[in-house]
Image 1: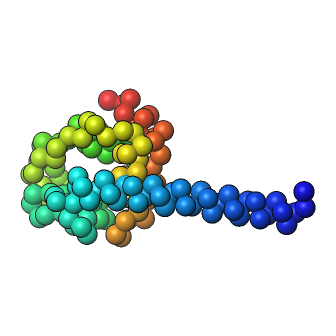
Image 2: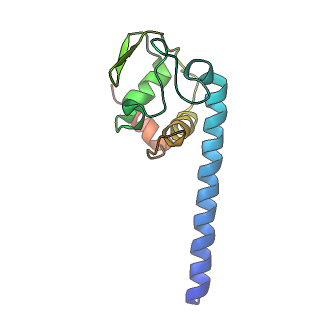
Length: 132
C-alpha cells in the first residue's frame, strides 16, 4: 500500500474517532439537559449557595474521577465547599445510569463552557466505580 493511501486511511479513521467522540458528547449533553440542567443551569453556573457550579469548578476539571462518578451514582447530601464557596442543596442519586452514560455526561461537562478537561471513558467510570 502506498504512503498516500495509508495517510488517507489514518485521516479517515481519525475523523471517525472524532465523530464518535462528538456523538458521545451529544449524548452527554442530552443526559445533562434532562437530569442536571434544572439545578446546575444551562451555563453550568449552578445556583449561589444552593447548587455548585460545574463551569470552571476545580473538582469538575480535576483528576479525581472516582469522586465525580460516586457523586453522580450515589448523590450527595452534605454541604459542600468548592473553590471558596459553600453549597447546601442535596444532589439526587442516579443509580440507573450505565457506565457509558456517566462517561458521556462527564465528558460533556468537562469539555463544556470554559472547561477544558479530558473526556472520560466507560472503562474509567467502571474502574472509578470499583473504588470506595
